[in-house]
Image 1: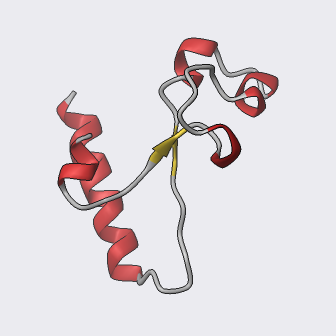
Image 2: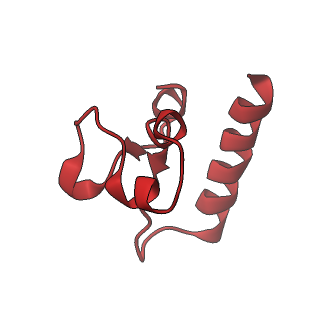
Length: 68
């Protein structure tokens, strides 16, 4: 939600299972605990994204993570 408020769109879960409340089966198969897998976010980039946008996303995410 906080990233969305900053104009950065991310999603939880895989693209084919977005909106679900179950953890990603891929993360579970990689050995990630279910509680942690449920908190994962999916980040999608396209050819139109710039290096500046990616760096801004990283900075915003860091600020949120270290704020917690």
